[in-house]
Length: 316
Image (cartoon, rainbow, N blue to C red; front, side, top):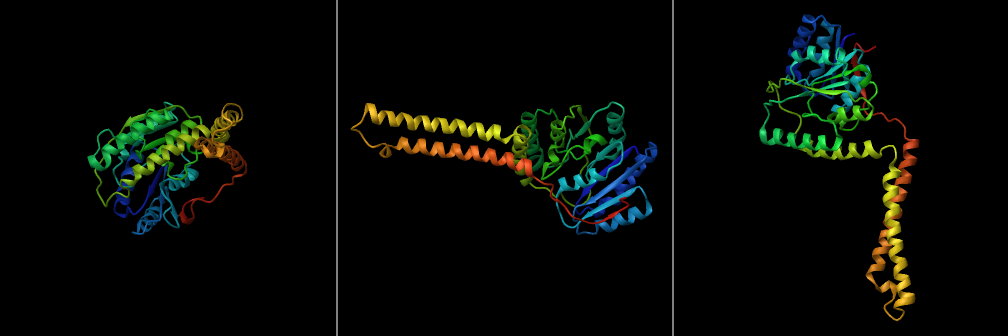
């Protein structure tokens, strides 16, 4: 199979039929063998009924319906697990991503051998204050922190080789950082393509300003995980040892000062420096223990169920 199109969605009933017809038109005009995977992330507006109807008329349409809303990352994870195409395209269901971009994205991955191509919505039709400016700040921080030189990390329109989607683990709210996850997994041929952005035709966005706050917090998380996720002792243990040595050295100095240089002065416990050194040693010990526990957790962690599927269509 040439292409798998993975489309996570939440309450996008009005746009699904139009999006499906547009994708099918592109596939047929380019003679692609394909599948369309709709991942219904707990919709309550009748989106699943539309997907069911599309699947009954087009055998290339498959669907997965979550028991409740688990988030876009979990929807992508479920879609990636089922995708069979040599190239996997992800796009949003709100018609803001243009299916006409698919052939060129396919060529860049299939022929030019890129691991991942990320769309760049250079010209946007979103609010400047609530989306454009925060998005630019967010993308700047992501570039500086991750080292992945992309202009638009959060663009839903991306293309992947099948090998990439089978080897990355999209969890939590990490869908924004799939290029970073791919890089950390060893897939370094990551490119970018300017894509058309269209104004939302139906409904309203499901994301508010809080997504940028969460995005920055996730950025810190992925920076930490990428650098110390497999060796937490290297961070916590090193900080703990340094703080313990500093605190112990300070306490040792106070002891020598009391014994040899100022025996008639105040008691050590009456000096505030003693409590500073004591607190430093305690914090250092706690950091060391945190690193040790982190190592134990890494070695004993188990896979947990992150979403529950209510029903699916055409999934073998």
